Amino acid sequence: DAEKPCKLIWDMIEIPVLLTLIGISSAIVSFVTSKIVAVGNGFRWQLAGSPSDYYAWIYYCLWCQLMALLACVSTRWICKESAGGGLPEMKTILSGVVKPVLLSKRLIVAKIAGLIFSLLAGLSVGKEGPFVHVSSAIADQFMRLSLFKHLRTQDAKRLEVLACACASGVSGSFGTAFGGVLFSIEFTASAYSVRTLPKAFLTSAVAMIVFFLLGVSDQLSLFNANRNVSQWLPYAHEMASFVLIGFVCGLLGVLFVYIVEYLTNFRNWLLDKRRHSQDELDLRRVLLVAAVTLVVSVMMYFEMASIPEVPRVLIDYMFEQDSLQALLPKLMLYFPYKFAVTALSVTLPLPVGLFTPVFMTGSVLGRIIGET
Image (cartoon, rainbow, N blue to C red; front, side, top):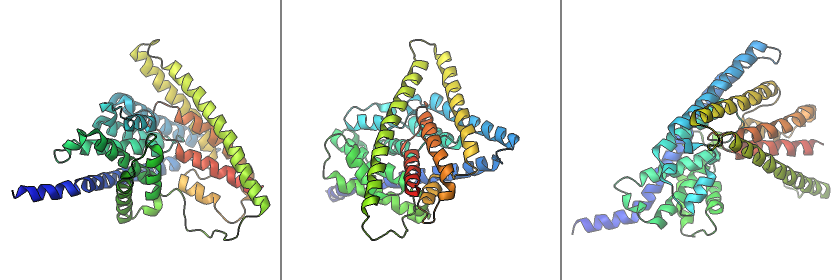
């Protein structure tokens, strides 16, 4: 009889406790990943000298090749299912089709390691997709514990918790709780249960509180929000420029999807299991990653001297109120460069995200139109 009140209390707080643990874990994973990438990229940028310093260029490219090779090896030999962004896999899982390996411990390790090495290789990739997948896998691992084990036997509850974990994954990428909740609504199949909304917000809010306690809440956001924004309504010619940006971005989005689809089909043809042995596939996979990384590293080396490559720094730079007219030729060169290397990078068989480089490309395009 004495156990009944305790069980009743536990039943009431069980889901909040689980979501809190998921939020804390997602935040810690994001924090550790960001710190490792920051230290590694600091070393990578130290290797870069002036564009005329060919020895520095060789060292820089060798570093990128080594990191890309480690990303390829960790993906292939720890958990081959960790390749890709992870969003299609999570959308499939949230639709009710669960493949156990996609939520396993091996996938968590391979996804994090592959993402870190991909970022250290200088590839034009983001973190959101892998973080969403990793957060969901962490949530599933928590549900394997004896305290929460019965939740895994209830499909509706399990999928509800995984949807909340997706929200914390977005919060871990961009440092925004509301964005995580909105993403979980958009991402969850065709129907969204309203009762999941406060739970998703709790998970995201816990992640943000952890970032605040760690002192990195401002560093993880995509851009600095403390800016003087005009309080006046835009003029007619300004509205026309906004329409132009939307039209151009729509056309470029179609072109980007077409290029990515073409490159993905080429990759699938190159790594076709029906036509090649496993040893051949492993060799082809390594050569593909090495070739793309070499192209990207060469292009990036000569761009780093004029344009900041850190997402937060670059996007903040595009918000500068002072004119960037002197940098306009460099911005016009940077835009097609970023467009091309992003398309090449996100089609590699590695744990890579897409959103951050796309946002960077869009910010540069908007500034180009604004300056002209």
